[in-house]
Image (cartoon, rainbow, N blue to C red):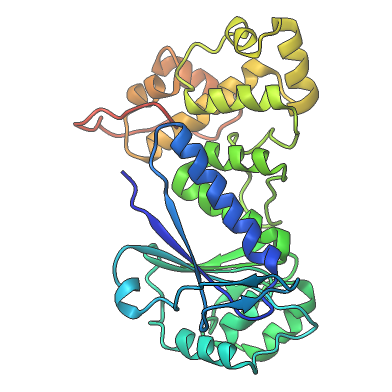
Amino acid sequence: MSPTTHVHFLLLPGSIILDWAGPAEALRIANQLRLAQGQPALWELHFCGASSQARSSVGAVIQTLEPLPGAATLAQGQHWLVLVGQPGEQVALDHPDAQALLRWLRALPVPLRSGSVELLCVCAGAVIAAHGGLLHQRHATTHHQHLDELRAVAPTCQVQDNRVFVHDDGIYTSAGMTTGIDLFLHRIAALGGPALAAQVAQTMVVALRRGPNDPELSPFLSYRQHIHPTVHRLQDAIGQQPQLDWSLPRMAALAHSSTRHVARLFNQHAGIAPLEYVQRIRLATAQSALQAGYSVTRAAEMAGFSSDGQLRRSWHTLGMAGSPKGSQPPRQPLRTGRA
């Protein structure tokens, strides 16, 4: 069972509310979806500050903020530290709470313990991180209006233009308010699986984007740039149990529709034929299993292929480079409820 990740939203007076509310909602929805599937929640949310309350960018007052987490807290378990932006052309940090936060940031051990303590910066939160000395010789991005400011505050930082988000060894920076949601969908996929991230995106009715230099989206995240509920429901079901016999009649029964109508909906809204979508999901599942060290035969079984030969044929038919390779099967069988 995956351990709980504690997510600490570090809020200042004037913090832009969408910078933290959007990502927080994405995590809440992800937890809700997991609980509905009989799985434990993966994230515990904390709203922290140097003071017990802070007035947000739109005037709403956030009360009963938790204290900034101490070193003993961060030394145990998994933690995400979230810095968010401030309104204005430049980030103003002359407030006592901001100065207290900067002192706290400067006391963090550098480098952060990637995988245990990670820093996620939304929009101009990267500028605050730079003031805290955390972006020295790092690659990072921020809102386009703050790129020059970030360069001035952290001259050794390799500032990246025109990126949705940038990752550099446990430090994530994103380009704007809504790209903070993109960043958190990326992190949800890493911990909870790409199918969960796709469900969260569909629930929030947001597109799953990537930066210009990021790798192609996996099939779990591709073909989801639509809002048709029936197609999303079928895609969710296929992604969660790719090993089932996903024939057109089975899909039609789940959709309470005809096979012809299901095929039309998939092509119209997802831009792909339903059986090709199944094959791509199965291939992605098999790839994940192979990367985890499973044999080709076991990976084929987990993904729903009838044999390793069928996996190999699908591999070449869909244009994958090389051929599927695995290792000896693990001693313990893997549960196949999800890819």
